[in-house]
Length: 240
Image (tube, rainbow, N blue to C red):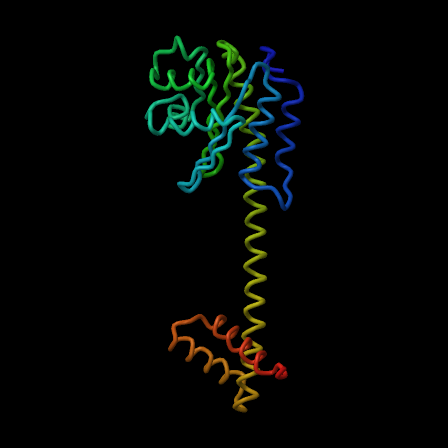
């Protein structure tokens, strides 16, 4: 516990569960799970959003549609707690948006979305940044003494979850590329066999012929091989 009663005892375990990956796991599913877990596990939290900034691509997830509108409006407003957290790398606490004077236009949008208090925590993961925002419909919900423990817990657990997802994605990509390469090699061997049978040339000469024709027609060797094999199979079918 953090001493403020804000963080539930089960929160750490639920966050740790986000690190388990499967074929259905993605960065998007981790963000969805994160926002749902935080809303359940933080006392007084009414909603949450998570923005993942990676390779100039932004993924956004939120527990409520109003919070997506609020998060997306920040670029237009050019001011918000999340923008400050992203630029400084430090958490930003807004006990009450109505009495806070730092972001007047953001305060108006937040209150229209039913938000009164906000806590934004930025987390750097490798070359990416995750910006987690917690919202409450009541003022003064997020206590200053809970910020550091919560930020530390999120940094530890979310970093592991995202790295696991990215590592798993890399393995899946490598496997797909290897499968594609093996399939390409197989169809090229088939095409070489067709040429060798038709002309009586060697395997090396057959591949040289494939390469020459592919360069002439500006088509990849593997695509030319697929066309040749497909045409050969059509011609081999008995006439109906």
